[in-house]
Amino acid sequence: MKVLLIGGNGFIGAKLALVLHSKGHQVTVIGRNVNKKPSLSKGIQYFSGDFGDIDFIAPFVESHDEIVHLAYASVPNTSFENPLLDLQENLTPSVQLFLVTAKLKKKLLLISSGGTIYGEASFTPISEVHPKHPISPYGLTKLTLENYAYLYGRTHGLDFKVIRPANAYGPGQIPFKGQGFIATAIASAKLGKPVNIFGVNGTVRDYIYIDDLAEAILLCLERGKTGESYNIGTSVGFNNLELINKLNHLLKKFELPMVSVTHFPGRPFDVKCNILDYAKFNRHTGWKPSISLDEGLERTIRENQNNLFN
Image 1 (tube, helix red, strand yellow):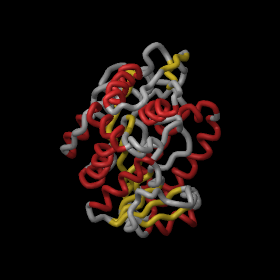
Image 2: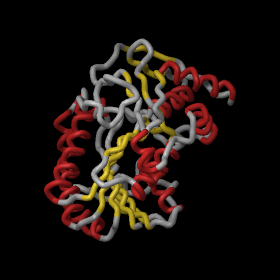
Image 3: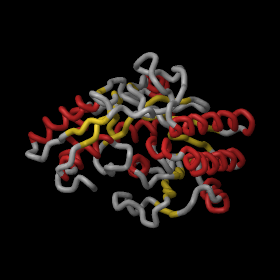
Image 4: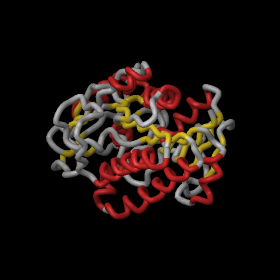
């Protein structure tokens, strides 16, 4: 395949680019930064630009078979602070991309949000049929993008699939970005600063190792069904304090600084519990997570021992 990764210079996209390239696919990455990540190999083409500029993005869409849309300009807390900016920076360019992709008869894989589109869970693990009542502008915009994909699938013949990933983590994730609790906790320990926990025990999340997620996205491109949405997670949840206890056990083992905690009141836009059921995706592709949280945390610490900000 010739695969275009829009937003492929980020944590998930950069790993996916390497996996696709290793499987023999031709990969082009579009990012906002002038320079591509050092981890991206020389065989991966990189271009800097605004995917909301139709004149810029249309030739790339036309010359590729699969379009993977990973780009998003905000995170849940920044979207809560400025919901109008969240809409302006994310909704309009994405809808334009859907129209161009449909017009050129290419395939689209939208990377949505498994952690925010459902809102508060009425049952766990959460399957794709769970009611969707986001409690953050971030989640609402992500769900709106999914609905536009469905709309253009129906009205314009857009060939699309949707992935809703759990909380990705692993080596190379940048801390202090409003997402990536594990990266932020480890980096905070290195700096001797406490990590913030909102609520008594924090929130419960489903954490998926980056290698597992990249493999799932690859399988979705190859075997996923058109028009389907898929949860990608582990079906197991941990609250923030449980996670910190696991981290501190490993950090002590590696003789590294341990994580301390500062408690704050819960935030209104944080879903209390989010654990994803991946059974549907398993039925359609055979995928299941292969790396446990304990193993993934150890890999993350081991590979980042010398530079936790890599």
